[in-house]
Image (tube, rainbow, N blue to C red; front, side, top):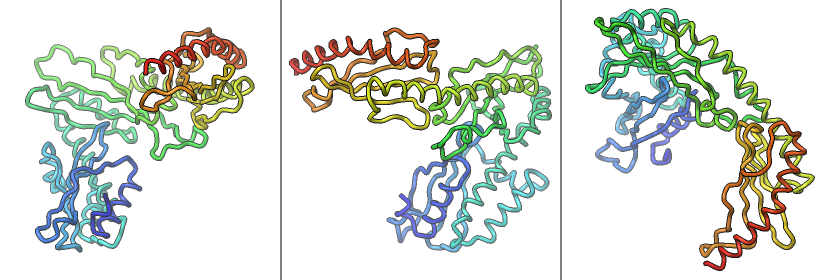
Length: 380
């Protein structure tokens, strides 16, 4: 994609995508030039914000390559540009840096687009805080006053013609570097867990404020280590505020994350216990130890055994799948078994006993699978 842009745009875009703290996406690339329509000079940038995304159009001009790009904000943020012009509002340091990035633009400097987007995003966060603070809701004003000392918190106004106005908070939880806890960590971006808190804006005639809607959120990559879907959130009591709610949640969540890290070694020891029975694995997940593949035989019948381990191992037993090396469907696809989990298991066993019981199960299951493979091949 970047090869379709002029070199000066391509260099800045590449630097932005590789050095921005969060994962950015590019959409809707196009050209605005009448004379060079095959050369791209503008695109839509999808930027993570408050557990969602915002979209800004970045408009370079091929006919004026020395000029800074224009930034067109989303249709719901028409007031953001006016906010940037308001004296005394927002983060003055970020604003001055953003103004400098635009006024002293250098198209040969690959870092300039990154600096501009970072500063504008900081200003956008200040804009949303300002909007939330302007809402005439005592509970929201109290929440904002007690929670804004937390680092990294973001908020956003949610409104629409067919829904009640709401304020969403994105609250980063735990001052914990999860990436550093995982040996040989493959993650490029920091893995963080957030609490999404959505408050309906209370009206003056409301008898009592309703509890906010709560949801844990995290990057999808974190599921290889820890699934937030397995976390039960504490109850939100009447009259509670976030400053009261968060400490217990963070303490409980921190313990669960540390436990998830220790379970990596337990899964690794289980896979190692399989080796004396099945031989060395053909392949195995070396970081999270969530899967392994072994070659097994039953007489002349050779087949692969796939072990799939959840983050809840050993509470949840491994799921197995068998694949023949000798039987194929008409399309040339190897014949596989259904997922297997109905075999003797106890999370209290030693890993050596777990491996032995699975091996014993597969001695019989291999005969059933071979019969299934022969019947399936006859049908094709």
